[in-house]
Length: 234
Ligand SMILES: C[S@@+](CC[C@H](N)C(=O)[O-])C[C@H]1O[C@@H](n2cnc3c(N)ncnc32)[C@H](O)[C@@H]1O
Image (cartoon, rainbow, N blue to C red; front, side, top):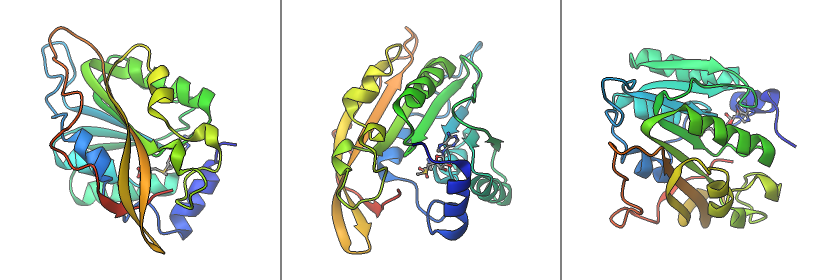
């Protein structure tokens, strides 16, 4: 069953997740490949990024510090308030939107970059969200998705207990029929848990909306580290 806004509000209020965490290194490696002027052109919006299920904004803030104008969407008012406060303190160009991803309709043909990290919802909702995200990309824009790989299930690394909500490269690629998938990988990385360092598996997707004017990014990042240490987020 999908978790409620109240569930996430409680976690952000009483738990130690989200807002104190550094951006996820696997997400950052992908985001760094997409500069804010990716879709700049006479008929395309400039510098617009969308963080779906943004939580307390670790990636929203990272992108805004690099010149993106970011819209952060989440149904946790607590998480968004933390994002909003930090963005205001740093005078960053961030808009927060309190909305349920099941019904949120981003403007079509608009965003140079759309990000979905560790948002594990039911498969029908996930497929619908990915379809709306694909439509919301501007020509030449990129969608980046990072989350728990199915192989993390039952290994004590948190994440959903429901196999259907876990990611695999094959599952997510199949749900993006209208985009050109540039990277779809299971990535092994290291996380720090209460019981020490553990191996963890992530799914990393980068997909682009094709246009003759915007060449593909490299299919994989041979020069980027595959093993990173960071704190696990459920
Ligand atoms: C594990 S957190 C990840 C947050 C952020 N993407 C990150 O990587 O730090 C999952 C987030 O998705 C949000 N979320 C889950 N289901 C949602 C829905 N149906 N509508 C809006 N937000 C949702 C939760 O409120 C939570 O902030």
